Image (spheres, protein in one colour):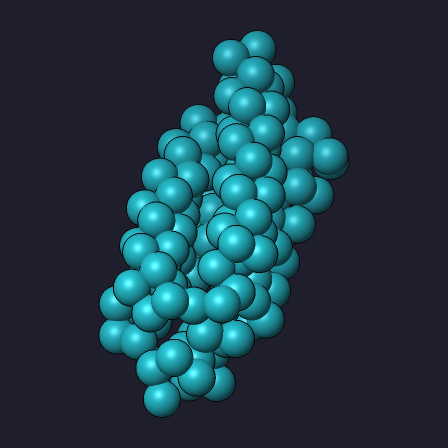
Length: 135
Ligand SMILES: [Fe+2]
């Protein structure tokens, strides 16, 4: 099921909200690619795109938090680093499977599902704490 952005997810900062919408599109793209046959390479490239975009988005978010002297900055930044590490590990494992011309196994498919929940939970719980900064 694709994730649909809802206004309850809004932190009320135009840049962050627009980037979250795009992030969700990228995650949905990975999920759609998984349904295609011989999806290894496609999934690998999409996960790479997702990693690059997530990295840039987290940097932008951290800059905005610093500009607003946000008290939860350190904790939030740590959560970003955790997610980036997980994406990195996932990319690595998909890359190996693709290089060895193996189909993605259950563990990798499961990781992609987890990735979706990490990012969505992050947006819904951790990012939403920033909303008072922008209201
Ligand atoms: Fe965040």
